[in-house]
Image 1 (cartoon, chains in turn red, brown):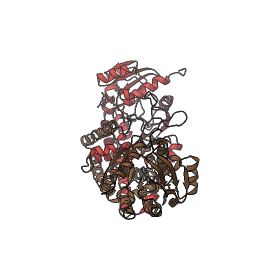
Image 2 (cartoon, each protein chain N blue to C red):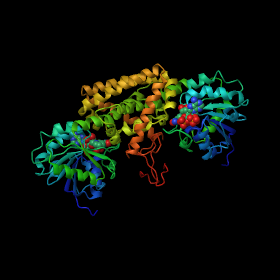
Image 3 (tube, rainbow over the protein chains, first blue to last red):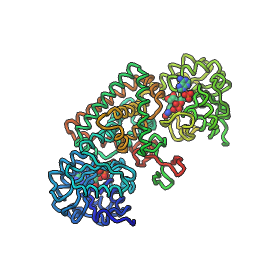
Image 4 (cartoon, each protein chain N blue to C red):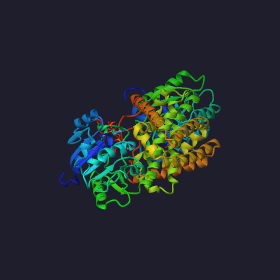
Amino acid sequence: MSETAIFEKLAIIGAGMIGSSVAQAARLTGAVNRIVMTDRCDSVLREANALSLADDYTQDAAEAVVGADLVMLAVPVGAMGVAAETILPFMRSGAILSDVGSVKGDVLSTLDPLVPGDIHLIPGHPVAGTEKSGPSAGIQDLFDGRWCILTPPPGADQSAVEKLSAFWERLGSKVETMDAAHHDRVLAITSHLPHLIAYNIVGTASDLEEVTRSEVIKYSAGGFRDFTRIAASDPVMWRDVFLTNKEAVLEMLGRFTEDLTALQRAIRWGEGESLEKLFSRTRDIRTRIIDAGQDEDVVDFGRHHTDSEGKEIE
Amino acid sequence: MSETAIFEKLAIIGAGMIGSSVAQAARLTGAVNRIVMTDRCDSVLREANALSLADDYTQDAAEAVVGADLVMLAVPVGAMGVAAETILPFMRSGAILSDVGSVKGDVLSTLDPLVPGDIHLIPGHPVAGTEKSGPSAGIQDLFDGRWCILTPPPGADQSAVEKLSAFWERLGSKVETMDAAHHDRVLAITSHLPHLIAYNIVGTASDLEEVTRSEVIKYSAGGFRDFTRIAASDPVMWRDVFLTNKEAVLEMLGRFTEDLTALQRAIRWGEGESLEKLFSRTRDIRTRIIDAGQDEDVVDFGRHHTDSEGKEIE
Ligand SMILES: NC(=O)c1ccc[n+]([C@@H]2O[C@H](COP(=O)([O-])OP(=O)(O)OC[C@H]3O[C@@H](n4cnc5c(N)ncnc54)[C@H](OP(=O)(O)O)[C@@H]3O)[C@@H](O)[C@H]2O)c1
Ligand SMILES: NC(=O)c1ccc[n+]([C@@H]2O[C@H](COP(=O)([O-])OP(=O)(O)OC[C@H]3O[C@@H](n4cnc5c(N)ncnc54)[C@H](OP(=O)(O)O)[C@@H]3O)[C@@H](O)[C@H]2O)c1
């Protein structure tokens, strides 16, 4: 990498799937010169070490952040507050404190009161991920071509925001800045509600008596298996998302349920025309997602394609 | 193909995605010696011809079935009755009339009264498909490793059922026989409800004002894009599925909504433990689907993988 580093030292708090992906991408692109990783769990750190994710590993988060220019919290949203409290007294003046949490309003309102004036708090959220957890689930090009949303609080230092943007851009992301509350509404519909519904339908299916579980599994290629992929996501991460983005999720869920009730009524009364109309309308969004490069127009109903070595191909 | 053909002549009614896939797979595996394809639309037949899907093409369905041992209806469920009425007087004695419709009770009750005693009616449903339509959307190995469900009426000729099973097995399918009503309940949860919910959430998202449509598209990688794939399926096919499998769909939808209301309540009251419990429980089904070979354990949240020529790789 001939490009100069954007930060000298990066400290990653939490060696999970996202923490690992940030480490790999930052190393690969030369975005930082040094990476220190910390995790509450020794076995996880050893796994991270075996994968050579960082330069240094420590279970002591306070030790990890000493001298870091960028500290990235990569723990579940509900754990951000305690993690920040532990490290803040040891962060150097002028450093940036950021995170990758899937909810931003809660992170901002939890961290803002804790952060002293000489540290730049700039919450962020890379809109990229998988349903897997842990260091070995990290993917070095996870952020490539994906959006990363930054939600700096009002009055945030502009040069710090620009530096953090440059960091994510180096990792391949396209960066957008918005208000934390708006982020939470957008993600409520594009991510949180889809997960909630996927979890719910998989739950409903597991509880059936007349249709056996083995039949649900056998015939899952009809559509159901795509939902099980999403519903295999980390339970703690998603518990925290729903607990901390309650308002926006309940609001979107209310709209969803209303629409579903109308659809149910159309089915009950055999209103073929209105069914066909809705089913035609929804095609348009798909086309636009493909045009926007956010998915590929390859059919497979949830089947995934790897080369002969089991590596994913794009 | 050194194996001998199972049927001499196959007539496919409807040159859509499934009709095209059946033709390609039957040709590839030598399951039949001759294929005639028919479609109400001349331009579609010309497309099929350009793809060399069959030996003969005709817009006249009655002509197509003359002398055929197996006639496969591959039109939307709501169009099966009229299609069968058109061809039945021209089918030869002892031939099998089957279909690929996604609902089986309705097909059976519509066709059974029409079919004379010397023709074997054996409805079927290959549980495999994509969200695309038309002859060029056909895939030659679409049925490979997938289940095909046959729902012969009580008293069906056993040797005819066995021949049709052998046909689907030659195409790569695993064949299961069951009661039409049970099929419709199983598919209501594994396929019809997932599609309904996907259509619904995409509809809800398109109607939002505060979150713009372009934001929904931009940040769809957070989960939403997987739903848009399913919700891009053919509107007429799915209209017919919901109109003809009304009872089972409404029953499953009732359970789904009940569960969703409980989940909504847990979010409103901040019941983290019950959220985490449900989210953990749903992981198990995913594991079993992968173990059963009905999906691959490759992460990608809806991203699909092709080689440099754009061909899908498995
Ligand atoms: N998964 C996605 O698709 C995705 C996408 C974008 C953003 N995010 C966000 O990224 C963050 C991390 O998610 P992930 O997918 O990387 O999850 P993960 O693989 O499960 O990793 C979670 C990390 O947080 C640590 N952790 C969990 N609970 C903790 C606690 N109470 N105190 C301190 N550390 C704790 C874990 O430590 P142990 O290893 O010791 O358990 C692990 O290092 C979350 O905020 C999530 O919302 C996720
Ligand atoms: N898509 C799936 O994933 C899937 C999976 C398993 C089973 N199925 C079942 O397979 C059947 C065909 O679906 P497909 O995916 O192949 O759909 P498709 O690609 O849209 O093809 C539908 C075919 O039916 C014809 N058709 C439509 N309406 C008709 C009518 N009123 N009268 C006569 N012909 C008509 C179409 O003719 P034109 O080309 O002239 O319009 C076309 O040949 C359906 O019963 C469906 O339930 C689908």
